[in-house]
Amino acid sequence: MATQKMQKNFPIAVVVIGLLILVAMNFYKTIPPGRVGVATLFGNVVAEEYTQGLHIPVNPLYRWTLFDARQKTHQETANVPSQDQLQTRLDVSVQYQIDGSMAPEILEETGDAEAAVRVHLIPKLRSLLREQGKSIVRAEDFFKEATQTTLQIALTDGLRDFLAPKGIIVTAVLIRDITLPPFIVEAIEKKKEREQAVERERAELERVRTELQQQVARAQAGKEAAAAEAERKRILADATAYEIEQINKAIASNPAYIQLQSLEALKAISKDPASKIYFMDGSSPSPLPLMHLGERPSN
Image (tube, rainbow, N blue to C red; front, side, top):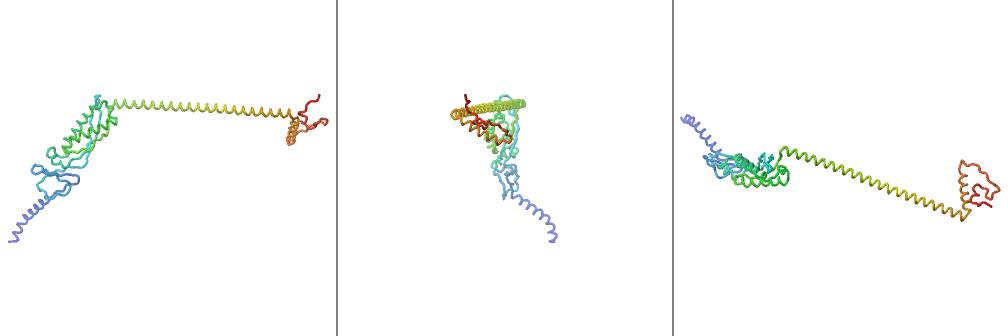
């Protein structure tokens, strides 16, 4: 009888144990890294948020919604009109994260994290882009560094002020790309081509100017060289004239000077293999060739 009773109660015991295990498993909750958990009980949001880690005990009847509180980036592309009625396409990136301490409030008022971005961040970003475009005079001004800096600061401040109470923390707004209207792009390219042509012409003029300066320098150097050569020749001529003058003075003052020179000439002739036979006048007071030079003719 006892065995039969135990057999009848065994399935009930198994069910009870299974229920106890199931309830025990729901008495703790593990929140993954970078997430924030928000619990709801019968449709009501629990005011306390649950940060990453293990939480014991928790109500096993809680229903959980997880918010990703890590850094994220939203990319947006919008056509922004400027004061000249032209539209410029801007690609911007918004770096943000969910404020984990406001996760219960976000869930109650807006929904999950994706809903908060869709409802609050995106419409406000588009509105700020249009508003900031109205302060820009010309579309091409978007390429100015000062304009881009001002635009980024205005977008960042505007989003922070608006989204902070909504539970979204904006860390930065970055301009990724700017696309001007096609005809402005074409005009800018033509202007660039003209500027490059002017630069090429300026470089060519500079090259010609340099060559002319080099030619002038070479001509000046040639002129100076010619003047130096003329001066050298003049000095040589003066030296030769001086030498002749001195020789003439020596001859006039000393008749034997010619005879001395004649002897030197005879020595040089005698050393020449091609020397000829010279006939001497024995009746001359100077029988050697050339020795009669410098003598005054007798009357």
